[in-house]
Length: 355
Image (cartoon, rainbow, N blue to C red):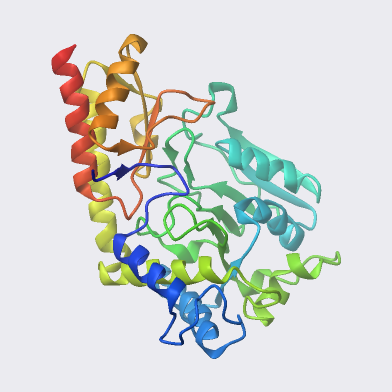
């Protein structure tokens, strides 16, 4: 049976990417060697790394604009600390919209002062705060563009002269933005870009070198730039599959094309959530809904067993909500086909007819 994979991460990857990756596990570039066993210093892998970094910048429209792309380790969670180590001299401003921004704040406080400009924590993060001011005397402003657990997404970013740092782990490459507004972007690969194990960091070089502290080599962006993401052995397979996924995105027409499909998927599912009397959305404000993670609940929990069994029979996988929210979460990442959303909507309608 075909599976419809709505997992929040690690998540669905394009079928063509999986096929190419599986071939490379056995024989990479006709070397009669596996991608898993070649040297990261070999010509073949260095080419992969260089092309992956270049393609990331190309998709974001940041080539030749003073940015560097890095593939690092430690997940987005490492970037919570690494960002502060490299950029926080006196004080930083943070928008708190979920668990991950909350954790980023905790790490930054180890380094310097943190101003929390706004938060939706008291309402279990079911909306994106508005009408907050970014102080002019901070080293940077940090935000999380999409919140996988709660299904909220920032659709507007503040106008400020302060450098903007953004955790885009769950919506990078999914929609068009003016990425040059951001001085630093980071994203764990396991949502829209590849398997777990590597993290993309895109950094504007002119924001570096402004802190007085000594930075450990592994956590120093400039060291990583100078070593071209090869300061230590990189996660070779994760970088390779991320490269394949970036190639797939290019073949699909890039961000502008994939955004249209993503909008179709989100519109279709949210339309059903709003129409179907058996379901209700989790997010308080429609304008804050995520195009990547649709969170919803049953109005009557007694129908849970029925809905779950129908979903399983249809091959729908990975829709259980996060334990802190409950209910359901359908992740609509780039590689998820529109067909899968149609199947989920049909399941919701089928349960309605039988209720």
